[in-house]
Length: 214
Image 1 (cartoon, rainbow, N blue to C red):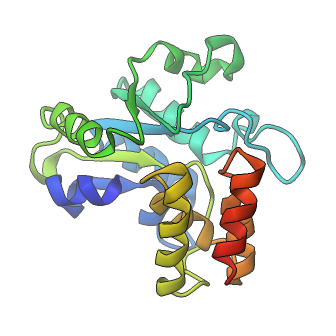
Image 2: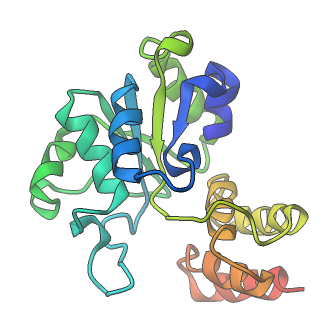
């Protein structure tokens, strides 16, 4: 989806969370400044968005240093429109399941990107954003719910192949899922195992892994 936004509005008009933050800078300050310069924030929400855990086993969203929480909170505090974008059948979180500073998110009108209508859904979203994003003066921010490093450890052809295989099970969002995961993996089998968690059915997951690791 970020590629579609860049193609429509231009690279300078799209801020993709930590992808745009230089190493060595305080990400809290950078998030506050970058989100503050945007006219709208898209919050991508998948089925496990709320339950995503930290290395300590607690919900990441409950940590005051979680950058997804920081991004959405910064936008809400500044009165910037926040658009929840639901993917892979996700549902909106209820207010009482969110940290206090994020509870207003539960009342924001959401949009859904479905597998069957992916292209048309993305087009409708971009059309709706057009009034917010006009030239380089205004930007759209997209939060990425998965932390990642600065470089890809798995080569690009392998990433494309894994994305193609995964798309058979979860649809076009596979491209985003695999690229994020690749930043955290050092080997192809590790990448295949990580992204296979996005496939709900056990037999389908086993089929994907058998094909992916060839």
